[in-house]
Length: 267
Image (cartoon, rainbow, N blue to C red; front, side, top):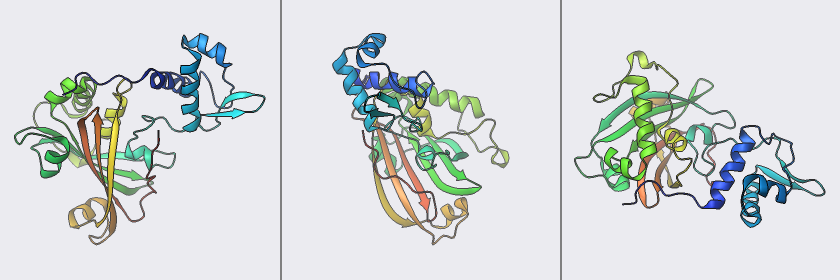
């Protein structure tokens, strides 16, 4: 197993520094970046590394090159997630993230799905989160998310392990299986497990693979989403890894009429 999440390539870390500066207002929308020599000196990096990072920022829509002006920050830079792995509530939120409503936060034994995708031993205990994503009062998706066993996360991605514990402790106390709250209410706004992972991974490279199939909701999922059981739906399965080690697996059910899902997120 890999230990203590893999560090990003220097150019990607530099990309993050500049992207952070854009999103925190150091370089606000419409502003022009300093010249390459000046910016390289300010950041303490080489011009070749800076140039490569700037090209990636242009490809990802944060910057535009204007003849005679230089590199300018786009008026509407992309929303900040983890630039290449985004929580579903932001990805399909069309600029306004969907609300996450927690249905269940518990611990369970591996299923066939998690045994296959998280490589979990038969008697492992896995954190399981079930959530409904809603927008404008309408249920848009049902998410099932599982984290790898704690002992593996503590070795491979300790920041994620700590963030999961803190999130759960802050809402319901961590001792024992986490139960439903009365009436489905939350002490604080709920978040998805992937959102927790993204927030804990600013210094850890993630990769993800998803599969998409057509299906029907079925009765239980239909009840949760307020739709008939025979409603057509798209099932998205997702596995997120640190290096070669899977740390999160998920199933997302999007019924007909849900917001559009971008299929390709490119580097």
